[in-house]
Image (cartoon, rainbow, N blue to C red; front, top):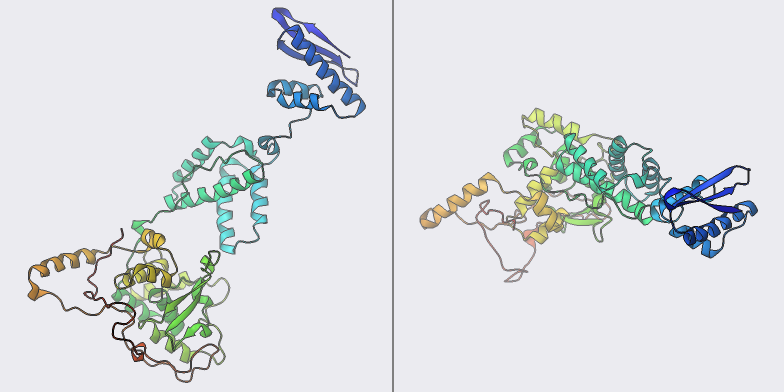
Length: 443
């Protein structure tokens, strides 16, 4: 069925006639006659298998699997073998980048709309650089590094690039788990998001009052107050707030947290009814339609752009927009509260971790340096020390609680927390601090 031919310099080849009558040659290169005879036996078995339509035995299968790619390619060229289907890279030989991304995004039925938007943005960057028809094994670690540099060259912020790289790493990790790739070419890319000090902003009490005065109605005042004084995420947490979530008697808000609900215990949290927030809740409660369910009722339409409206209000108030419109309000509130309350308590109220708070929320302000310098100066002259007041945002008396509130889960009377009895020592030893003079320690 097959014969061995000899070329000069000890090179050998296998000659045979294919099923269609054509003559085929497989060049073995330099090898001994014994090696050529062994190869001839295996090739004859392959020829017989092709002619009879049967499978080869285990010994020939193992021989095929151990052949180097160049020799295996010669068998493919003469029709005695099919492209390798074993191994992760071979399995991915027909998988394109466009197909992988499409299948992954469609499979993630567990993610929210905003996450899908992030998926789409990352897919656009990947496809724009590599092309939809790029085969997965053709993308290596060097290509991933070049892609990251390309994103930076497009002027994207470092955090945006890191977040995008993290998403790409997630896509290709799924390919590895599907045995489409042996390793993740994006696995070593930096993906951690760092705090950007340039985008920090502390919203002063003066600017706060200007904006509240410029709000067109009580709902807008409450939207702003919930973010600035309550630390709620806007719009997600604010628009989910119901009147039944307001516990007037115990002075608490039950806040649903879509952003953190996938974390254990992160689906909701309790937030105090801070004295600065109460008047706006009271006024909105009195103005609510009978039987109203949601605290924010008029601005609940799908796609309502609160940011655009907020910018208009700020322009009317004569206040220059800060970098992160609603997140900076939460950051401001957390910074204020951490001056007077233990960090773990404030994190529970705001709904983040100590690590996230220190990296993205807590701020060191210019006035902190000034006050620290003043305190040092006053320490040298005790007669000039400022008066010390109890630092407790909850110590102010409640004002004008709504009368006869009969919503589900809402107490009928609102009592000031100062009316509650407390033992001689209380729950914890009282601490005092100079009002608004304590600097923040982030270490």
